[in-house]
Length: 444
Image (cartoon, rainbow, N blue to C red; front, side):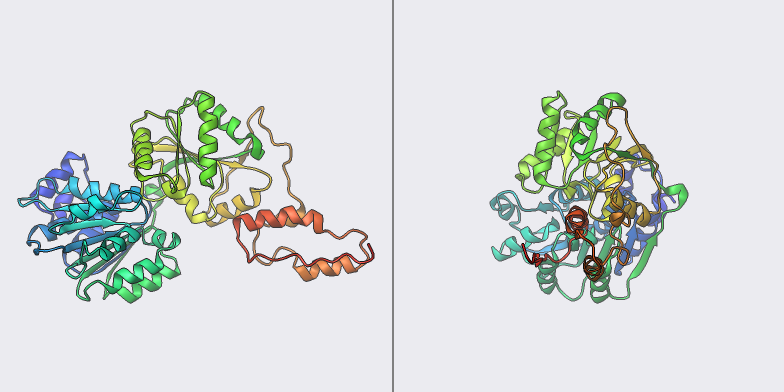
């Protein structure tokens, strides 16, 4: 469907044409008319489907027709989970709205990790649109820099990630400050139970839009699962980069320490690399991402701060150096490549300790990848003990009572030592309530 058939103004169509957009995506074709009608919208679509334009374009058109009130008020509020996504969404609003008639709409992006003073100054006189992370928005409200009493449209972008990152309390406080009469838009790739319940409580007779991924719409991503012992992963990564002449690689690891550690090892090997994690200053995060997008560095080693929402044009390869904790996060990680009709490659490193977890990821994402081995990096061990073969699926592992019964049945050696590494690996990916060992040795 063409954008011209969706009811958008000539100014917005001109901006769209300059970005070489030819046809609206399914989520855009369904959501833009619904938002223009002024009702609430509850929309779900796969990552990379164009959700930002689906709410930004109609909101710009609605706001362009009415003036802003005097004072520190905001008319449209967009809440996002990360600083990088906030900057990206803010750029989209400014880009799409560049040809709207004067006076121009004032769009501000506010997030933590940088000084609050320039943001407070920028908010003088209010704003038409604020794109914000929840914590910094509450800081600005506490400093009386902005009021939410005039908000006419609220957008939750990547709503599931807002909850996953622990913003539930902040969201509750923000919602309490908003006017009852407003338009509310929920956009997300998935809707877990917490987000589902929130949407039902906040939305009034919403237009519900769910865009399933048709086979023809599936991104062109070649997925690979390579078996390798954990200590050999960095050397294997170097080998793959050089063997395939990858120009840019986004590498996902589990911890901020790992980002710095892996990036440093790559730099020592002569490969330009940078780390990206939540503990970096915002300036450092912005610089690393900009250098990577401009191809001035070859490898960006990141935690899941880069897994959602970021649009890195032409990214050819994603590597799961560490597997994600959640099968849903796997989909979003590999979704950084193969965007906008381009092809991509997603590589996952699988060790004997993580094979069971990857099988669960495969099951949840309805895929079954052949295991590869690279010459010179073959794993020394290729099978876990039988007790761990289920990948932590509930009901398949032996219970504590079963293990105690086996021990009481005359076995000379209790299987505690053999089980310990397996249990710790399962806990790494499926956190359980910590338990204090209570084993007691008698007669020794």
